Length: 369
Image (tube, rainbow, N blue to C red; front, side, top):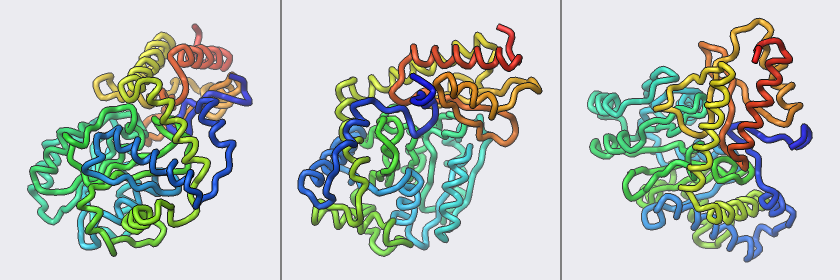
């Protein structure tokens, strides 16, 4: 790729295929029957990835993934509910802030940014506070790339008779989640992540029974998933202007997803990408922030070089000039940068990125390799 069309090694937006971009070259009428069929097909395919067709409804929503997270909290948590928010990074903190802004009672349990939330701690907290009605978990915390133990936490939440809300923004489509085995009221994801669509559409997999009794909960007309689902079920249409080109791109991306081999193949490619990245960066002497056991093959956080000549902005611009977009770190205690493993890229592409990073750090007189 050239500097004008770089590979995005970020957590989203991602590098997309030419076919996905081509799908956006057609204009759609928002009430057109063919577009309604496109939306229905996308929702059907998304539910199949989770084995959730019998138990959940897929409710699409305009906007980024955070829009969908706010919609899920606002719609599915009653106004007198209480949410236990599990935090080990920036996106858990954002979810807590959403609860605060929406006026939902909540408590937080925070672990270090390199420490997964333990199911035993969730069990203890639910025993201690019977007022908690919902538990909110970030499956893969994108600020570091850490993977939290979803199945174990889901079992604890179920055993307490509570409801689980999962932010699976960076895991859905690449890391296996089976709705027949992992009980949840809501799982939230978006178009521009592991499915390799373009950003602009979130979606919430809402438990059918929970959604059916959610009327009147929501703080917002636009964010009301109950209203959105009811209207779409009756008419096949979105309530308000849909992101037509985003839906069309996601439909094409899902065709490619299945052609590649679905979730197992997508996971395998990302795992190869991650390993190629880790191996190459280790040869340069750059250390990853997380141990391998809790590192998801989504995005990797690296310690920044301990050299006064290293400045992230300069590093970023130089790597960008070589055709790769990296991501700044999101940790508060140590200086880091992040490299994504997802998107329309393969292991040779990751090795090319490592080569570019090595050349830049040499040119900055930070590395001598």
